[in-house]
View (cartoon, rainbow, N blue to C red):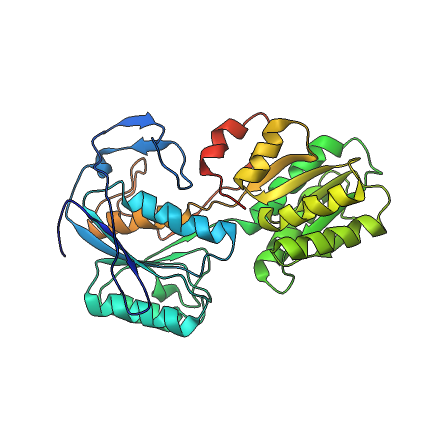
Length: 351
């Protein structure tokens, strides 16, 4: 593929219109230090021998529109990760929620003969056929977050853990309220029609059941500020006394907090979901009902870029005894509290 020191990253509009960004040159090996002056969601960096410059590779990247804080952070983190490598050229297609446009973007990458594709599909099933076309053309596809309907459509899949989010949130609530069998626990879900919401709710219920608690009141929002405010207002109106609330999504959490403030309520603690900077800063302040949030990593596509580079360069993931890059990587869903918020703030995003 093409080679140059800078610029390395391009933005593509529809039929792949290029805009350049600057790349950073990796110089360190076998060190562990924080990133410097990095505005995208990014945590501490561990560099290994794999980070040494290798064959130059071109990676196509496509994701839905950045109409949500978490989704915006996905693309920002992917760009930032690519910029760490002088041997990576990242072609970034314009974010879209139109599956036909996203299909045409992938077809464009195939025509260009990129070395790998990182794809967070708006709809995994709808993008499966074009991902299969890429794989059949010899282009490894890294599927991020929303799975294709065929296991043959991706070389590697990077996933968050929605069920694990619920388990983490429920376990934290149990740690705080497990000695109170009469505690009132409420839940503000995202869009009920989505499987990810079902997974989160089932994990939450399972963890609560383990300590003898259950969900006493549940409402669903829609991952928007407006939806979160409306759902929370309804919940607070119906429940005069609450001990804990788990809100699935920090973006809708902005509206949830507005409703709580409007209602003048603070007898409970709130656990968020996703891991926005806003929520982490409230946790850090110690004067908010927000006491914790559960991470759903916005660095998934950044991981996809790293794995795409390794696959294209025929390298092996470090710290594994096995050769090659795993077929599936599922990321952990840790709980962020006042005790560890400093560690996770660097990977937070603005909601």
